[in-house]
Length: 392
Image (tube, rainbow, N blue to C red; front, side):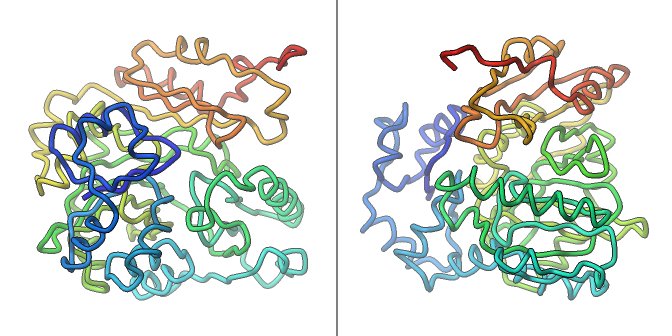
């Protein structure tokens, strides 16, 4: 069963839905999709009645915009309760604190932030929305000056994001301030199977251009990265599964590995893998169709998959417009950006005037050509941005 909602459904996901004939909730949006006529559309009364009869259904959504539908039609279902639980980052920290007792956090309303005295907090720390998406509203703070800049940035983001996402997905009315965890940031797509076994479909390391960078500029993977982290992450996910009953549960997890080797979760995005088209990277990087693997409860043969990729690096680039620029007064040169890469695998151009990102791009390079990725990681993007003409 699948819920399809705005803002974006990739052709790859649509083709998979048609091929597997996964039941799709019939909505105005899903019926407008390119391959809608070939999909197994199910009206809401039938769809949610069937959902209510299954305690741990095979359910997926491309977008957290669909959370509102779950709350409307089946608010007491275990799936709805788990989705709401994991979307609330402060509640999430209640469960994570059992595995990471030294992690602290505080919750504040937006209107309270101007009066927060940060002298009682250990620097550095991170401030982020209680419910968020795509690094919106996330700032690292190393000093009083950076705190003031973060407050200014948040107020600007509140204006820019107004009406872009529903409150269930991004809410800039409440924030948490929490300990900054030094270490490698890791992103995974995975699911807990019908028996509760964690199955990993993707492992990426999140690279940053500076200590204050909180963007999604570059996620990277390789055979070495997958082999290094796979088994320790599985063991950690088994711990999480024991803290909360999770079966047939797809999710995207971002976490850091601290200097002592322990994993400290940043967030779990429930009911989906990475957002927009980014879950498709599993196919472009590893030949794994994540939707097929989840719905058919398949496990990757990582040794076989990685054997042919031992000399490659794979990068996923999420490019947003620098926050100090007026999006209505600039033009992003998509073609020049794409041309930077010697082997782009896939890209999707987005309307950066309406959405947080300008483009997502997946690329491959030989390991000895990491500089091709690094140049974009540290770029101020001025090579790809020019002033818009009088007609925009």
